[in-house]
Length: 282
Image (cartoon, rainbow, N blue to C red; front, side):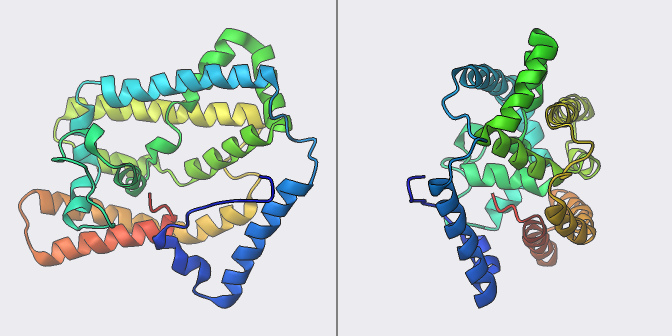
């Protein structure tokens, strides 16, 4: 870091981090301490520049991108699935955020801005942009390289701070997913065959991602190494889950012609509630 760090705090999280003086000081202490630690300490747990690690990472990243693009851009009907299974149109109608959800008329994924794209997946409890492609890429690498390949990935996790941080972030994102709740959003897709095909692809990749994450880290469950966050999420989940179920029902009513302003207002409230609970604003 060279004694410097530059970050952007999203408007939605400023109040939760800095509205209380003690909490604000604590967050600033963590930020300053982490910057100083990364700058001053000479970590053995940092293999930046290791050519073999870089080669493996480059190969897996290309495979992950290919898997992601195959789903999003090359799977027939994916656009229809996305617009039906997520609240993306309702987000646009409610004018959440400082800019429109899309750059043009909202009928193509390519025209969506990044924040609404990520935000809409977060509301469905799929959080697809945060993990999709990882499972396919790692599985392909391990199948090709065998046990020695898996041992290399474990060494990367142990000795490379970047890769370890990547897996830690993915662990956090996966802990917020819920395929049971996600299946309810998928039910909003009218075409049953399309729904089963694409949601089946998402479920399979999710399972592969969790399996590969556990193989590399030797974990038996998500957030195994982060009990503090696990407790926090466990405390919030009983309040978030009902909002998801309520949102699905409200979306169904709204899309089937119920123009009651109370329904629209309720959708707005569930969007805010789920985002606040998950702490994923997009």
